Image (cartoon, each protein chain N blue to C red):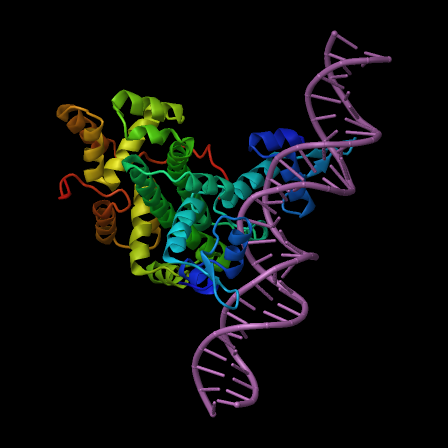
Length: 189
Length: 189
DNA sequence: ATTGACCCGACTACAGGTTTACAGTTTAGG
DNA sequence: CCTAAACTGTAAACCTGTAGTCGGGTCAAT
């Protein structure tokens, strides 16, 4: 049994949002405490989880309710939900990358770019924008996948030696992150 | 020079939206006709293009204005914007896939799934949900990448012969995921 | 000069929240 | 036990971004 703020925090939502969901009947707490506090059960929590999954797709709340209230079962449904979640995860990843770009664009720190921007300064910039090492690797992977030529040119413009460039680009290929499955190395089949 | 509705249509926006952008100062037409009609120049159009690119990331309009009004130049900026656009396109692609899933989930047609669902019915289902042949290929690629085992099991459950399954999965691997592509379709968040 | 397709500004409505206001409740520390 | 902080409740106002409606003006072509 969770109180409203507790539950909200588990999903990084605000209390107000859950109040709202209660008001519109999308997620009603299964019980109330003696003092009339909302009490959410584990089942409620599960429902909220699905709500959030659907919400991430941009679906309207009333449509979500429609789907949820026509409680379907079946393999296909489960599969589709799984796929939906996976797509959500992938999108979230790309979104994070975008966030970083936006931070860079918004920070105004790019003014210094025309002048001597070298590898260290660039790394510092990305770090300041909240990038972890993993994020940076991801960045290179994306960059390499989307615009190999620009990637090359960019690395060169940072004054990074040829050999290092080749290495980074090589690594970017092997890591091929979000769509994994290099048939060579994929053991899952 | 474009009038307001003309320009709006080029970006699949409503006239109201551009009126709003004008009101808040995000996008002011560079001129007015004799009859006081708003007249947008090519430069205005370019600005709107950037606005839409940023908008697709979920950024608030005032933040977009902040970025746009600190008119930056430079290679890094251009590169970042390009990357941003590419991420937008990728996300749009994934979102289209999600839309299809949501349609399937919402159509209630899945109730029939427990019973005899075969290849033809499944294809008809997907087609009814607005999937083109390309979309279906993409679907297999995604499915194979994310859950190879489930993909196999699923194809098998449709009563598809072994050889055909192997072929589909093989194709899914070779196709990889599609590169840049055009940023045509999208909706808000 | 009428028709149809535009435009104007001003307004309303909507989703999906968020904020504010104010009162009652729980809980942790001293 | 007392008190302060941190919670809870309801209700209503507010916010952003967008779509739609209104009465009226404009314009090109027939």
